[in-house]
Amino acid sequence: MCGITGWFSPTSNREDSRERLRRMISTIRHRGPDDEGTYFENHVAMGHVRLSIIDLESGRQPMHSHDGSLVISYNGEIYNYKEIRKDLVKRGHQFSTNSDTEVIMELYKAEGWEGFSRLRGMYAFSLWDCVNQTALLVRDPFGIKPLFVSSGADGTLVYGSEAKAILAFNKERCAETNLNSLHFVMNLRYLPGSMTMFHGIEQINPGEVFRWTPGRPYIKRNQLASRTYPDQNVLESFKESVDLHLTSDVEIGAYLSGGIDSASICALARKKSTKTLRSFTIKLGDDPSEATNAARSADILGLINIQEEIKPVSYTWLKDMIWHLEVPKINALQSSAIARLASRHVKVALSGLGADEYFYGYNAHKYMHLMSLVDRFMPNFVGKAVGNFGAHGLSVLSKMPWTESERGFRMLASQGDWAKCYGLLRNVWDCGKMRELVYGPRLKDIDLPNVFEYLEETVPKEKDPVVAMAMFESKNKLVNDLLWQEDRLSMAEGMEVRVPFVDGGLIYSLRNMSRMELMEGNKTKHYMRLMLKKVLVPEILNRPKSGFQIQSHDFFDKHLRVLAQEILSDERVKAEGLFNPLFVNQLLHLPPKKMYRWHFFMLFLMLLSHLWIDIYEKGEWITKIEKT
Image (cartoon, rainbow, N blue to C red; front, top):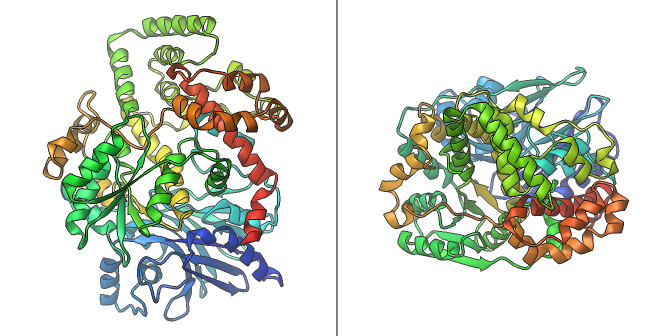
């Protein structure tokens, strides 16, 4: 795994170009502590940092094709590169290394950018075609690996594995905050689509190909075609995916919770491993038996299990986390903690991310299913009347708005409006009354987009609201929340995380299965549990859902309240102008009760938003890279 950055410019590189690229590389050096390389041509600059996983000796980058016609800077792993290489050799292509990087270039020669749809893995890369004077930026179809881009007024296209590399190109000490994006974070707790927290910087969407040529006034965007895979049952596809994800020239470990997602990966990986697989568990969660269950799973599966208590949350840890994430995120502490633990032992770890999205594993899927049953058996006007009456009554009686019970009544009132119902289920709160309560002048006095309207436009119009929810989240929450933080916080520790459930072959094998087959009634992961009877013993298989989760109210009270009181002082909140100081003060004095779950989400987001402002808007980020 690696980090890439650079630019394509219609004008020739200047005298300061090497220094500029050096500064950009320094922002992502943590992504590749093993090696570093650069490439310059008239219109092109490429920077690369490398974490060596495959072809340790000859995989240096940026890499030239053997005939010198192409140059590539690539971040990721292609799991079927040996298969593609064999096909290309038969067609007369020559190779000078054993790396997957060179396979991408030869595939481009043979089939153009359209051939990239054959790649099975996670990747983001820049490619310069010296002969045709064309540049490409490409991101994998599932968005596992990040790629950010910014287009200048002069036609220069700047890119990076992290947005801070683009800030370094522009020599901007103080970033311009995208307040629309902050508004989405405060509602969804992640950024959907191509949004970033930085004005003028966007993500390349999953499966997107940017094509750039000097002298042309626009960038051509294309989408990689969906590829087909051999027909095989879901379990065989899953086994194949795990097998492919074990491709490495260094030792691989695995994250292990007490649940079935990570246990199933560990069980299959253990069978393929020539040595005892090391697994990693953080002692933190809603379920106090989580670590005990993980240890028991490890014993049954024959794994080494390394456990660690989460360390006290410090100001320094939070700031470092936000520097890497580039967005305020409240569910990242556990990801950071387990990455820190695993990276002390291995360079690569497998994770169970993606199983909940593709096999219907969230409790939220249950609640949406129940809402669909209510819609089937209760007339809309009854649900709306009861929901509105209950929500209004609770808002009058409660000393704080938007308690868990009030949110439940609002969901009932949204019966049949599935985009709104989904938003409420995921704690979206956007309305004029709540903006007035939550926001300070910087956010209150501008024309912000409505998050519910955004969901109405983007959540698929499926008859089954549970299917619509799963489709939306596989392209948004999975990509821009879970995979985003998994990439950033593992690469912050110089470690690669792989996700066998987010695999084209496995997802292709699910294409003809209905939601009711995958989730029978209200039973989440129904089909997955049946499938894994051949992989896991009943003791593991029949455990209730668990994972690296925290109760926001309890955790905040124990670990973050004192920090929040220091950072969110009345004076500081007024000075920044993002949030209403009266509301912040109310939140700081709430008791740690589950009914205030949303309120503690908000308080944590406010705390992290102020840290983000310090780091990026006030320029602290530049100090960190100057030290490197």
